[in-house]
Image (cartoon, rainbow, N blue to C red; front, side, top):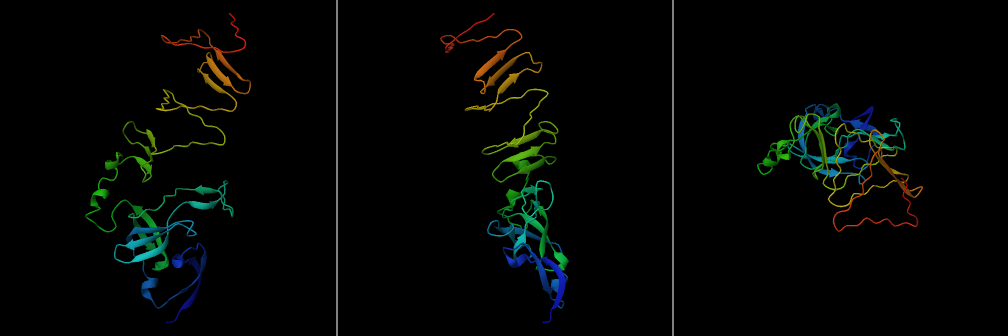
Length: 263
C-alpha cells in the first residue's frame, strides 16, 4: 500500500511515554484514517500517569466499541516559569489540573480526521456506556452531595472541596472543607479581614507561633497585648482596667526574681 510522506508534525499519541512532535507518514488511500471527523463519546478506562509516562495519558473505552490507549489528558500550561513565559526549567503550573479517574465520560475528536490522533475536547459527569448497576451514582450529581446547580465547586473524590455558593447560606458565600489537613502558606504575608466576627475554634490544641512578636490589639489601638520573644517580655497595655481573675479554688501565680507594681 503506497504512502506519501507528509511534511507536517504532530504528536504521535500511541507511542507511549513520549511528549514530542515528529514527522509522520500518512496513508492517502485510507479514507477512514483521513476522514474520521465524527466526535465520539468514550469513558476513561484506565490511566497512564507520570512518572511512568512523559505526560499524563489515559486509556479510553469507546462507546461504539474498542479501546484507545495513550490519549493525552487535557490540562494546564506546565512549561512556564514564575514569569508566565515558556521555560526549559519550568517551575509553575498555569491553569487547572484535574487528575483523571476511571468512569469519566469524555468527548473525543480526531486531529485532521486521523483516528490515530485522538483529542479529548470535553468532559462530562454522565455515563458513556449505560449501566443499570452504576445508574444511581450518576443521578443528582450535585444535589446528592449537598451542592446546588448554581454553585461553582472544585472537589476531590476524597470528599474535600471548595464551593462558591449561589444561594445558601448566602449568595457569594465560600465553603472550604477538607477531609484531612489544611495548609496555608505564603512567602510574604497573609491578611484575614472581616467586617463582622472571626471565630477560631479547635477541639484540641490551638497554637500560635511567631519569630518576632505576637500582638493582640483593638482597632483603636487603646488595648494591646504583645509577646516579644526577641526581648523576652510580655507587654500588656490598657486604656482602662486590667483584670486577672481566678475561679474559686484557683490560683494566680507570678514567679519572677523581681516583682514590681507601679501605680
